[in-house]
Length: 82
Image (cartoon, rainbow, N blue to C red; front, side, top):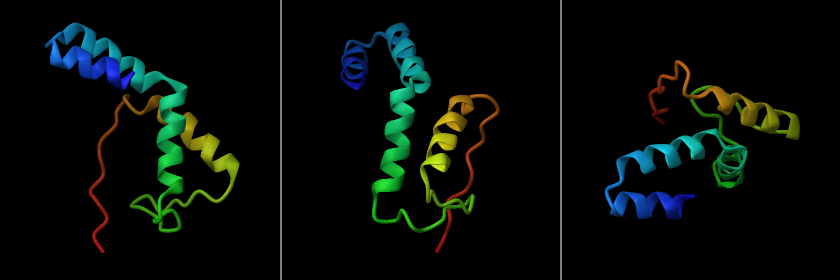
């Protein structure tokens, strides 16, 4: 999907870009990959601003499901300063 997005951006096709972005945001696989990236990096045992650490599979599946509604009323939180 990201390769298609790059191609559409290069061709400056705004309508196709919007469709591809929406499909990326709503796809289950993209959300699962995002959660996997968060739990597989070296900071996986450090809680973020929301004080959540994924310790079991139930929490991972909960976060994948929670990301489904990310576009509805989402407001970015400030970064955690250390």
